[in-house]
Image (cartoon, rainbow, N blue to C red; front, top):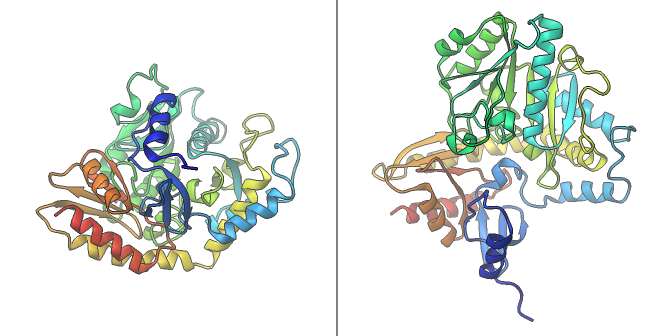
Length: 399
């Protein structure tokens, strides 16, 4: 019996799903490690890793085993009751981040929404900002999710247009410009929401010392530094958190994507007892946030990161990745940015979509952003010879 074809399945998607994505013409049926296989049996090397959600590769044996153990016990009780995975998950994640408390949610956008609520509540109840006057500073080029509140402070018109009226209480300044941030700070600012590296914008790395400067400004103005490490965290840049490259400890970490091991949507706000202690029962919640299955998988992710081997692998292979990318012909490549196993490659004349289509034809999966840029974020478990093969395909694709 002949199975479904890529063409037929894509036609079903086009006919019956909302067109909020424009996927490459690839239909995946199976995946393991750094490799994926389509419905017709063609293999692809995955250099996107689901925007860092699959940092440990597809179906990592330790994570699958942790999920299967928990599936045989209990998967959901809601937060109306405790379960035996919840306390250990919170304690272990807090320790990994050098913090004290955790508020688990499901998606990255939920973590960001939770952080916004936290910063406002803390501002009113601890800092003493007058009611309904709290301001949160964000940055041009930001990407923190797609809820109505989050797109209210987006500078990407494609993500923002036609969703008004927009949520007030945000101030947006240029990314990488400390003087602009300093000018935006006052006593009404309760939080500064920042990506240590801007992923969706094209893997934009701020100038050296910038994150440390943001930390200083937050401290001097009594505002919370909120680090959205949903894409940049958990080993992606060669350290557990991207903030660690500058020795910076934010007041809040926002985590997601890789925390679920590519199996479950798992996110969390990680902070101090003083900050997350503003919540009382009934003031915030989630039916699925912190569920037993999510916590069991998250605990295994934390255990894997606790040895440092994945961070070290990301740093070593990342140096090799950037060395290879920096040797690409200058007439074709305008700029290469990134850190660790994360890179944005901006092309001089080719569109990012065209490059990604050429790569897919050669068995490599990547994703374009902002016209002429592609993002590369291979799983941290990728073999060096596989990475080199993929980079060879990139060289050929842009000839």
